[in-house]
Length: 435
Image (cartoon, rainbow, N blue to C red):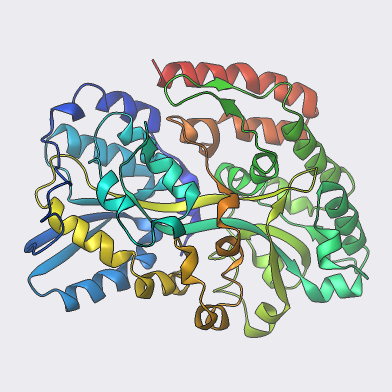
């Protein structure tokens, strides 16, 4: 699993504009008929993100073995090309039957009426109440649902319990808010000359957005406000954002962050933590656990990401599955989506570096097999990802204003100038994309 592909961003703004006025001409999928998803035959064309292909390959193999009359053909698409390729396929009237796409990009297509309304079949699932609210929120528009959550890629704080013990720290007391985290990070830095309190890939836009925004979201605010299509920036005057940026600036000024954090673009993300040289590491399961040694995994513990005032959240990243209007085999597509969301396939997702999107997947057997893969499932309502048409342009791309703001606030002139510079850039991008 390579999260760097997630971090590339994409041409989301241009693709969104390209969809305008064309997707509404595709034949609508009727998901209300009693036969929908039953007795389908033939082939189901499924597109997935190359970065999350590992989370889907075994599911496809299992489905094909169990359904000889209905076979899935899986096509991985590079993350940086996914939005544009899908927009092009929709414009050409030949979309795949199912798209497994980065959940943050769901609204790009839902807003332009490109995806089938699956409200009745989604809400009819007997486990609907167990589904990730953060993923569902990205699939909802005007009280209707246009897809189904599939896999979760969540940010958390990983801690090295051995280093905590050496520093005389209690994990719970030391990770409850930003002040306690700062004090803990400073204490950890004193354990040894080559041990740091905190690690971050400070030159990767996607990683920065993935691990730092939950500190803000936990307070109930975002960096933008309003409904999709008419959103406004919420940068200047955002107290939770200011406190988070000040926290990271203090980590840097006090030498708690390694000097490598300034230039680290994510190519070796997590290597220092897995080597036992970092006490606190905001990251994902897939970037940390699979490549760690058994002895290192035994030292790991996870907690959700806190805000300055002690609330908690995590980035509800991952994939949603949707059926484009105009799909050739939408009934077969829904049959596959139901299978992919069964408990068996869901509980196997940590093998590929991901989490289930069903909280009821965290059974005792699951917890025993994946002891570090249940934190977000136990607090599934704390997950969040912004519903917007402009996430890649605002956060993920190297030229994004969120990335520029973080770099300037932490490594540059300071928090105030960085926030003031970001406000008009957020406004410019939102106005452009929502035009």
